[in-house]
Length: 150
Image 1 (cartoon, rainbow, N blue to C red):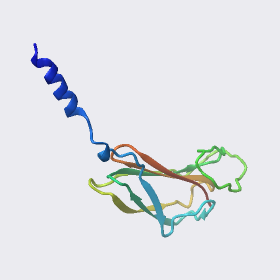
Image 2: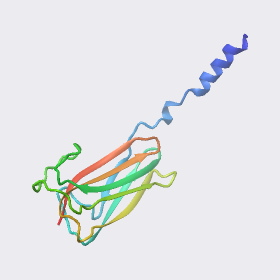
Image 3: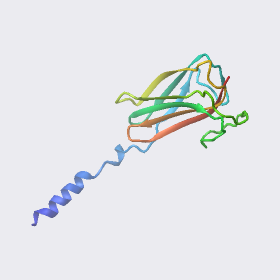
Image 4: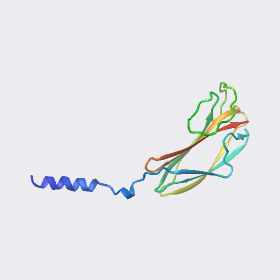
């Protein structure tokens, strides 16, 4: 029975972690090129290329680009700009894009071009553009903005 206390101490010591290897920092999002600016109007019937650069102090995990209608004038609470909004309306044929992808393992920095083809026959009006990036340990950064489709 005298061996068990030493075994327990050994197990506890083996489970401790080195504070210097913990990831306590969220990844970053940098937009480049033709990425829309807040309140920008994007033409329907065109393809817009969004160049996104992500970085993290340890390792990146995945990203998502989401465009959805804002015909009900909802808010995500993370956008600083105030854009002139259309009157609320019912969606008939709204544009929707949800593009998610894993970032190849081992990357601390990653640049991707996401082509966004906006069909000519979708509802024009107010939309939200959301970009999320998550690192390998689960920290997330977000970028939100209002845009219009015309």
